[in-house]
Length: 102
Image (cartoon, rainbow, N blue to C red):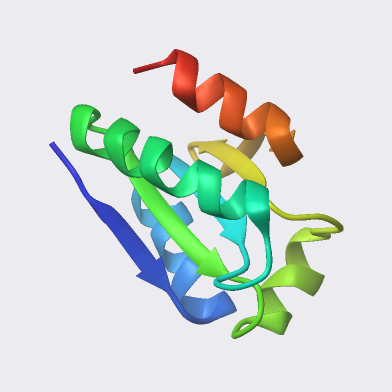
């Protein structure tokens, strides 16, 4: 089972997405975001129970990633399968879905 990997750059995130069959990415802010704070423990629990790669990106420290993926609000959770984005969840929807998966 896995853990949440913290990614700091666009190059690193692109490599993770391309090198793994499935990747779930949480684009959040480390401070000042209530839903980001609520999502974090659910995201961690989901990662611990799954063989899927879970990645966290702090939008405050990786603006190049935000531009590349068109992130407009936080938290945003993207699911990638074989390098292609398949699902996008934003705001409290992402918190609700991950909490239901526990």
